[in-house]
Length: 233
Ligand code: HPA
Image 1 (cartoon, rainbow, N blue to C red):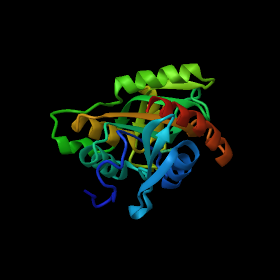
Image 2 (cartoon, rainbow, N blue to C red):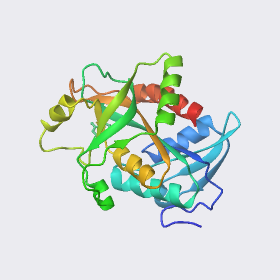
Image 3 (tube, helix red, strand yellow):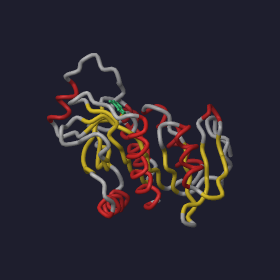
Image 4 (cartoon, protein in one colour):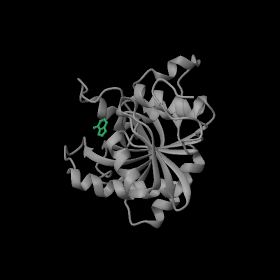
């Protein structure tokens, strides 16, 4: 059955979905890495594809930017399409000098300034963490490759252009490695629905040095992250 945001039919989406933020990246990755690719969604141009990687059925779909967007797509994939694992493959800003441009962050957990988890009416603060099995597999793959990677906590923020630039220093002082805008909602949704999620990030910009990667550099570091995601899918 289709949803308001996804026209796929049950069975058209694999048990594991890789989710970049950008739907055009989903299209590029599906065409580059998967065989026998079939597009399952184009509603709102949030493209989704299913194909095979080394004989294994895998789907790739855009999540859009921010927690409301990934909250919708991940909820529907888990609830209505039998998806068991979502691996977000995204980019982030670095909070630490040691976390350099093009490095990979394998996200262990995330903090947030969002009230996404208020819906669960918990008597405290929900700590959103990745699935340990997926995390361990990703770490093992990263070790096999010649890549610089970090494992740890990040900030999932609702705000890209923050009015108070000092907030980054505060999160950094609590050990957060970097900032993106989706993982907290993805991990919380997975926990709520008893499913599995992981986020892999490449560092696209630094909030410490204000450097940014070029589009071409982003593409290259994205390739290593993508291969890790595909191999553990
Ligand atoms: N802030 C939030 N999200 C991001 C950033 C950033 O600096 N870079 C990539 N995603």
